Image 1 (cartoon, rainbow, N blue to C red):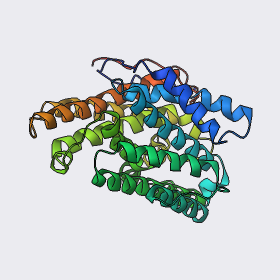
Image 2: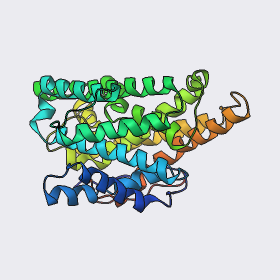
Image 3: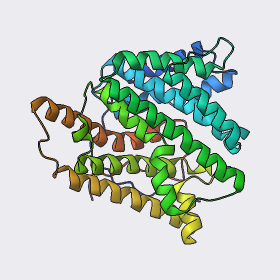
Length: 323
């Protein structure tokens, strides 16, 4: 029996008031494209409470912006499950071809009527994203981030097909990419109606805050998804730690929690180093951007505790609010 350690998260629990409306909207949006082939698929997805994940990441977003983010998360979840729960996740050649077609759609190549439901859903997302994009350069960066995410899933499939467990350094570098956190970070600018100049986005302190927020979400995700993933995958921090350091499963879970907590502490220590980086509006936008980096660390853990997506370990403790 594996127990879940406490996860340090000194942030208040917040959720957008549109959470449940947005969740139902995402479920119906996907059903409208014929995504759910069986009623059991519909019920399984509904139980994820995906709209509440978006709402916990973006507690201050408008209804319209939150719906777009939630729909993107829903598309990603369905795509991930189709890949991870079928032979597609072990066929890098086939997965690369499928990914290439999805990337073409994001670049503006409309799907034919006979293409799969996710292709048409992605085209709809693209049109809505373009309507909300803060700048043309942002769109190019988003598509590049999506392309990197797709490429990273082929890396995972290649590992699976060869029976390879990634080494720690590679896994830590790749995890925010495979988990879509780099893409999710791009969506902050849409959800919060902000746009940060390039020189602000690449400020070293903001880069540290973004990296540690991404990592904290990924490590928490790996802990909560352990039961789900250990049946057929090795791309999980707990399993990589167990393999690399010769740990028991409980020791690896504890070590993963320590790594999560270290990222959160680095984040909180770094926030005070972020000074004014531009004019008043830039600083307002920066504050909103960093606010999401805060909320999604606590928000993921809160959502994982209420979602039906993951089978919990022995006990699921609420995140702590201090040392």
